[in-house]
Image (cartoon, rainbow, N blue to C red; front, side, top):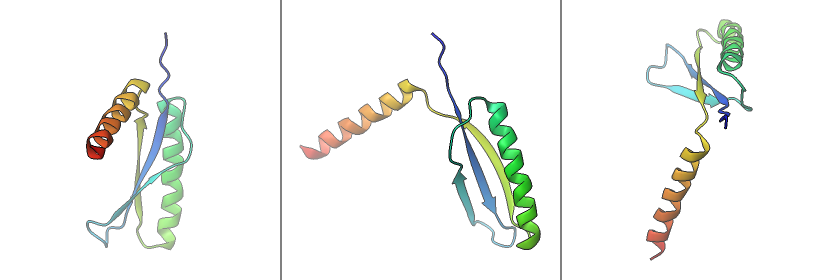
Length: 89
């Protein structure tokens, strides 16, 4: 069986004049391949460069992260369920 793991695009925004301040943005939708995700991230960074010219230096970097596998999600859900059961006792 082949496991399909899509990629999500995360954009990290910051401004050099505001040290320590940043914003994370998860773009809507998923990508079938890491290459598609990276291409979309590169396009987004190019858009930020244009935005930066108008807003004095905003910067961005993109990351393509694989979605957790079904097993990982199931284990996390099970752990959360057990936690809630213990709290309810």
